Image (tube, rainbow over all chains, first blue to last red; front, side):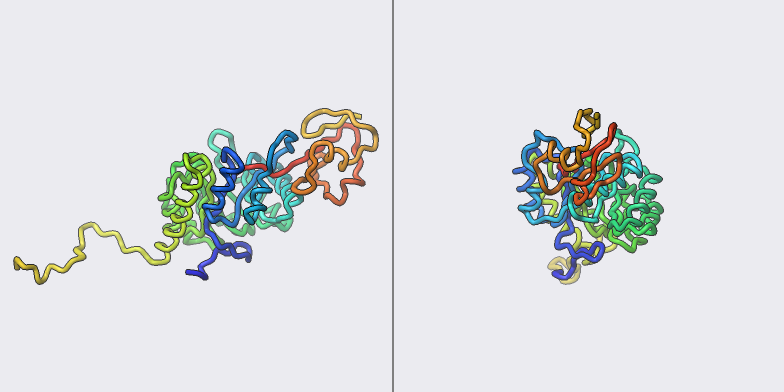
Length: 257
Length: 66
């Protein structure tokens, strides 16, 4: 298992759990949760400088030795997302970007048209693009064809904690993908993360399930174990489901026979 | 002349540079990027890029998210 490492855009990551930083009540809680999660890659958002802000999420990531993955959260058009990605590259010195182009504030669902447009522009500009996408196998393939280094289908809407609403689609995406598939959004608890890995996803990206849990560090540890367990189960090859029971103890040799 | 810094109108002297505006909103020397009228201005060009009347300058940094 030691050589079972996640590789994105040619770079190895030792953890298959990618964390978000949104929603943590304090930098200290965030620090504890990130440490407990074992993550090596963590998202941040890009926003106007707030002169009154205390403490920087970048300082926390630096202290923890975690690689930063800027996102384009809050962008509604390809143009907004491309500008935000370019600002993130300039500010943070990374060409990796979690590409989010949402359709509306109510559902936070991706706008597929704008998403593909932004992905094409960013790939042409040298970015390693990790798009947050719908659980649509066709769209996932279009994004891969556009040159994205991973595809990140949602399990259910961002922050909903509804888990994976269409496991069949996730399986279809996994079967056809030539780049890592990262289940992004909708995770509510550890079993959701384990299921994502059992379905064949290469990694899980989550934030709210940990940062808004009653005990974030404890939930972060739970997610770490769930991702590891789910990955092992996937590699181990589960038994086929059966309609009727199959005894695991022999019937021969009973005292009553 | 009047410019817009992170959406807020502000009066600045002629010849004010991007570097001066950035320094006025944050003391951070890393983790910050600037855009002038929706185009990124590389850090190496902040000193030499002067603002014009009605320019829109955005100064961004990383915050908790996603």
